[in-house]
Length: 74
Image (cartoon, rainbow, N blue to C red):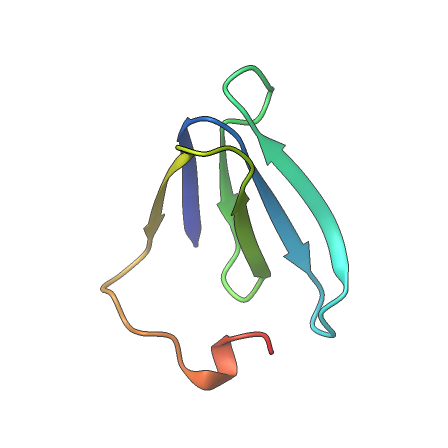
């Protein structure tokens, strides 16, 4: 599980299917309903900063392990 908490500014979270097609886009902003989220293991996703100075705290279960080539969407 990945946990994201928006600390400041605005970001967009993008979610993809296994073929790389965009399935959902969620904007996190201090003034919006969404300021935190969890992402299931195996869900293709990325976060984009929409303002200079955006700060996102991201935490993952377990110890740090670098991504393998199979874990990066090409």
